[in-house]
Image: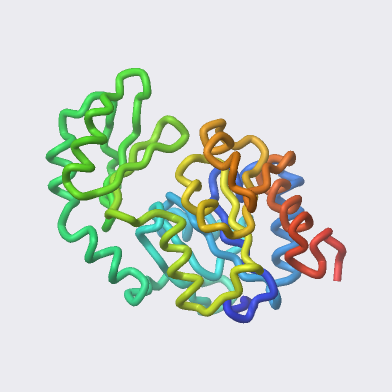
Amino acid sequence: MSTAPSEATFTLATDLDGTFLGGSDADRAALYDWIEARRDSVSLVFVSGRDPEFIHSLCSDNWVPWPDYVIGDVGTTVARVDRHDEDKRTLTHLPELEHEIAARWGDAGEQVRKALADARGLKLQPTKFRYRVSYDMDPDTFDPGACEVVTGMGLDWLVSDNRYFDVLPRGISKGPTLERFITAFGMSRGRVLVAGDTLNDLSMFKTGLNGAVVGGAEQALLDATRDIRTARKCKAIGAAGIMEAIAAFNLHPDANGEQE
């Protein structure tokens, strides 16, 4: 049983790699079991650079809890997880929340791929995302001139983990899309926790929402969030860092993990 974000006591809006999927097996199991035991009061939103197909495959393996919603593709996809029976789930895009994203992107994909075809240090990722273009980046050979090219096209660029380069619609990333999501569902901002570990999570922390910069986060994110009062620098790594922040911000009556 899942809970709508507007009705939840607490909503976790979390990155995946290195965050929700980070830490030891025991730490992940503790967080996942805590969430599953409280699905009547906890809403789960994945805010990830991963695409919906990856997330569907990940959760179908039954070791990661299904989210209620997905903000994927670095904030360019918004989808609801629909439950059909105990084992079957589908992801349904929400056009009312993707309309502005699509409008800002237009048909820029092919233009970006052509403009950056010969850019040094960038290797195009094979997946053709709808409203983004993504590259694997070699930091040793990367030519920063690619950033100027993207900016000149009226688009945004984002480097994360010093190895990924994303081209996004202007003004679109994880944080702004999450803000629109919260507004659309009439959610209480004080009952939301964002969590992340790399620079592409920075826009979530800039929202001013309660935040968990989990242990093991990249130094660039730690530096960028140094003066953000609501961004807790967690000692615990990955999933355990999320649990640490839930307790520190007192975001749920069972924030310390007591069993119901």
